[in-house]
Amino acid sequence: MKYIYLALAILLEVTGSSFLQASKGFSRPIPTVVMVIAYVACFFFLSQALKTIPLGVAYAIWAGLGIVLTAAVSVLIFKQSLDLPAIIGMALIIVGVVVINAFSKTAAH
Image (cartoon, rainbow, N blue to C red; front, side, top):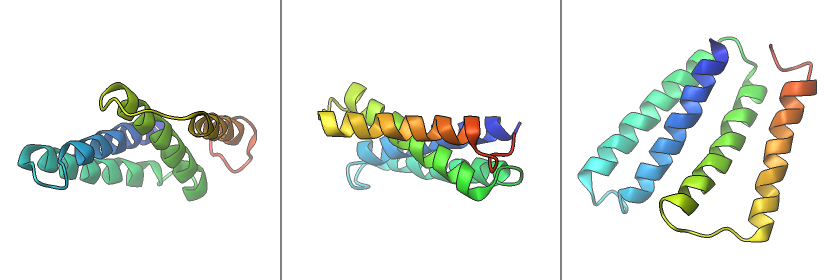
């Protein structure tokens, strides 16, 4: 269940970030409200995951996958582009998350 909570936290963080972009500096009320709700729910589920996953591991996964998924949304939805260094950096983040989960004794499985 702990990784379901973490996955929900990640998806809600990406949703919140996407609606932050859509809010256009908080000038559009509906995207702003969705953003606030998504971020509050995100931190609720992250707090639930932190009951059983060490903070460093949970945060690395949450932040790393959040960065990659938010970048994907920015390309697919907002038609923004990524250059090669950004893509390489995100690939390294994914590798880091895999290494933590596959090999770290700190990761509580």
